[in-house]
Image (tube, rainbow, N blue to C red; front, side):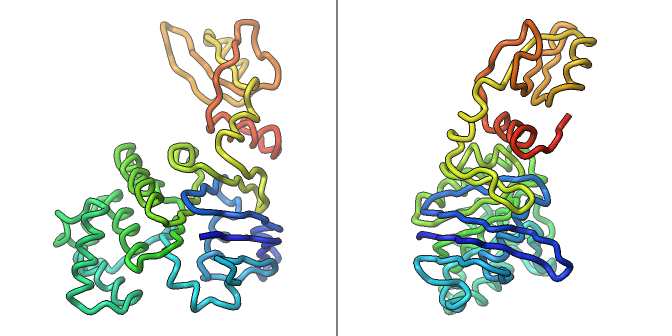
Amino acid sequence: MNIEITGLSKVYPNGFAAIKNINLEIGSGMFGLLGPNGAGKSSFMRILVTVQKSTSGTILIDGMDINEHRQKIRPLIGYLPQDFTFFSKLKTWEFLDYAASLSTSLKKKERIKRVDELLDQVGLLDVRERMANKLSGGMKRRLGIAQALIGNPKLLVIDEPTTGLDPEERIRFRNILSDLSQKDVTIILSTHIVGDISSTCHNMAMLNKGEVAFKGSPEGMIERVRGHVWQVLLDDEEFNELKAKYPVVSTIPTEGKWEVQLIANDQPHPRAKNANPNLEHAYVYFMENELGVSLV
């Protein structure tokens, strides 16, 4: 699947411009959309899945304009919103069966087979009889993925998928998405959690205040910060002095001192040495140096 986005903007009735002149091309596999809260990611997602209309610009999905071919495009899309909800009085399998009845033309017997296949795929088959509102937070997100997949979509759009999940569930969720991306499904992952992008996506864009601040590969973004990440061992006084001047990415207490990683254009301390950057370093660098958002 190929998605071409040209000049996309959204201005709400109160005059707020949520997204501004977005130009992107998204191919197969996993695509990450990174940005802080309020960057315009959710507005962009809702337009992409045809829940909202843009103010201007175009989105072509395999050559079809979403404004002209909404009825053809909608069956191709699976959507997991950030505020995913379900009917609390339904069992896990009943909820998924209900979702299947809305999005497919399968008969009851075929639907139940499809439901169990998906529950097994997301690791929920053993709790199929449990009430949906009794599932853990991670299980609910996995159920959300299952409902997004029930219609065999070619495009899967997921908004803030791992917010509130513990590390084990976050890793499991990412692995599910990685497996799906190998099955001819385009996945767009919108998040403010850097690890969700670095662990799963080969291509990405970063939004800030509704505009594209970066587009390319995570590796390309990381290269932009090489030479600006520093590591140094500091005492309490030195640490307090530096954290007031520079954005600190990590601190590890060790032997009464602090092992610190921070972002700076020039050597921030005589003992500081360059460290290998990662996507979290790059994100902080972009926010501070290219977007003018102070993190100190």
